Length: 102
Image (cartoon, rainbow, N blue to C red; front, side, top):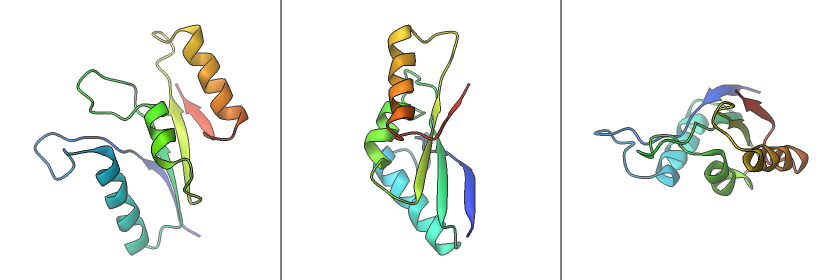
């Protein structure tokens, strides 16, 4: 079993990855398959106004039903409110994410 323990989905301006997260995720899955990677850990980015990073909430919506993909939630601990921290706690309890990157 090969596990890629550090992957991201983002929108990279002026590249083949500029369009949308779904398309970029599909490309990531294809690359993983071609290279014999059987499990992916995807790290959610901190939300940015330019949409470069996919948020934890969006990432959970995009990939939570795919069995060979696990999500690491991303938190900017200095700028999150209690509501967001409770949301992350619920993601962990419901096994929608497997960890948190601070």
